[in-house]
Image 1 (cartoon, rainbow, N blue to C red):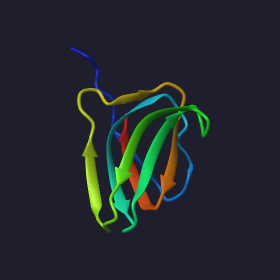
Image 2 (cartoon, helix red, strand yellow):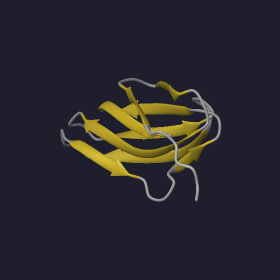
Image 3 (cartoon, rainbow, N blue to C red):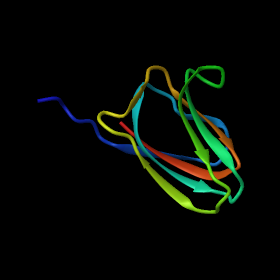
Image 4 (cartoon, one colour):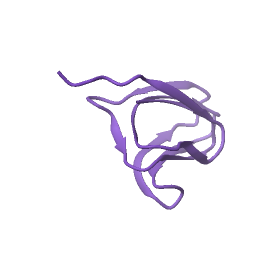
Length: 93
């Protein structure tokens, strides 16, 4: 049987490194501002490889995003780029 890891969370309200280690993103909660925008998660800093892109509609709402299986692996770190989004909480481990 595979060993499970503890799930942690981190919240972002601006662009920057969200998790400074190798990890897997398992879920996200996105608070949309009411203007169409996006959430982009990159592996390897601001110029790194885009792993997840979520486009948000022009509605002020909270969206829960579950990532299937073991989640998305980020080898180096998790960098977040927010456009017209109030906040994002990621669940990782």
